[in-house]
Image (cartoon, rainbow, N blue to C red; front, top):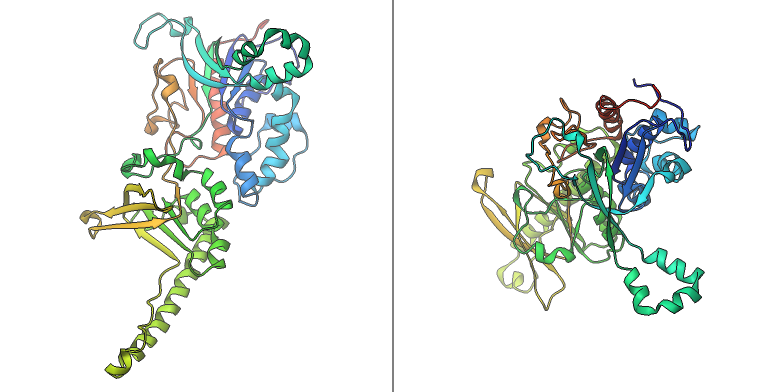
Length: 445
């Protein structure tokens, strides 16, 4: 365990390294806070308000179980911390007060990082040490709010400048700052994968993205939804949340249905390996739906036999009993291959297919009112194209602990479809920091 130095505000005894942290979630805050506690110079770039997906999930699903951890340095800063067994408790009792603490606010900067590269070095340029050239972080801010605030405070000054000049000040401008080291802590939750095979787009999906909800944003769409048919793509934890959030909605009206498609041979097979209350609740929901369908099928069987036993002239006058439908229809071993929307209809039409090598070849198109996609997440690597990087999942945690082939560049958190908790992230903070400190020493030591 690396010894934690005490938090010192505006301390002259700083570690000689300057670090950029990119992200707004718990691991970004923890990484930045730890380095600050070691008297490093830290800037935490966040695109949105601190808290990231944890903040969103806490507002939408506060009672969700969370196998979380608090850090030694976070508790040292906050003092006594309340219970954190649910995501709501973790946010309210730990992460929220941590993100609002003055120490964190001092090193936080609101802005979107557009790209990160070396100041001069090319990707394959060879020098004695690539650390001899600093990292350049290019970012942008939205100055509109600051400008409006200044206009209100100094109306006479801005009145002389003219409206056109004031409007020009509201345009986003690119800025840059140079750093010794960079840590990407953005995670994957804000970059959900499309619904097509292999994480690619289905036909027409890209053109119809405005009618589709991806990842945890689907929970927001569910809260506002009051139509009759929902289509869910994927069978992981987020899809389980979709299902359970729709439970009451499904029971309110007999015409409401959920369709779910997954390329797994058995839906939620990996998810059900967990022993969480979430997996137990979903098993119960699916079990109750199966029991209801079996009961309806039994009643239908009795009615259809009675109908068939009628004399021909009587049966011609009696309506055939309606065959029951599952409230939850699951298509296993299928892929979504196409998405369509007709101009004269509000519904979205999903075409799904199953190949022969998975058992039975099938093509089916279903019209629905809401499409929720949860096929996994992956890290967005586009802002790092100017550096030597290695986002190979197989090498991610075991050997290099998020260390890239570009010296001084690190990734903290998951990369692709891998279950990754805050506890694992805190362990990785220590590993990354150890690698960082191998390059630098404290002033005066």
